[in-house]
Length: 174
Image (tube, rainbow, N blue to C red; front, side, top):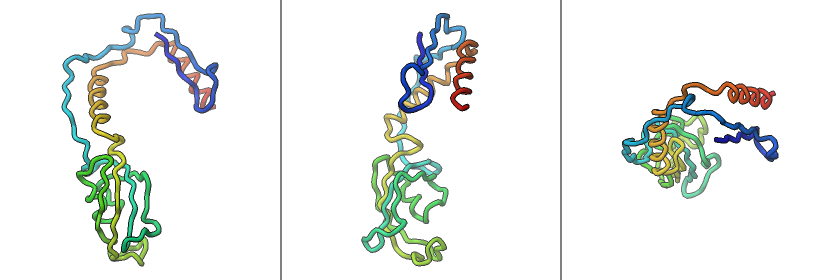
C-alpha cells in the first residue's frame, strides 16, 4: 500500500510529495471495525434549536433594502440570541436551500441603531447548510461512516512513518 502526502498548499511540484512504502502487515497497526450489520436510520436535516447554520439574508424596510441588513454565509447558532427576536426562531424547521420571509420588527429600544427601533422589517433568509451539511444524503452518509469508524482502532503507529510525519510538520511550520 502506498500513501502520498503533499506538503503545504499552492502550486508545489510533485517532487515535494512524501511517499511512504508500506512493506509490512498493517494488521499490526490497525484493527478494522465490523462493517456488516451497521444500522442505518435516515435522519431528516432540519433546523433545530442549538444547530449551527450558514444563512444568507436580505433585509427590507417598506420593500427597500437597507444598509447593514444583508449578510452572506453568516454562521449562526439557532437560539443564541445573536440576531433580533424572531429571526432565529423563524428558521426552525427549515431545510438547506429553503428560503423564508421573516416578518419581524426591530426591538424598541434598539441600541445598535436607534433609528430602527420598533421598525417592521422583512428578512428573506436562505439556509445554506446545517451543522456543515448541505443535504440529507451527505449527513446520512457521514453518520454511517461515523458508526463504522467508531468500530475501528489504531493499535499503534509505525515508528518510521510517525517520525517522518513529525519532521515534515516541523519543517513546514519552521
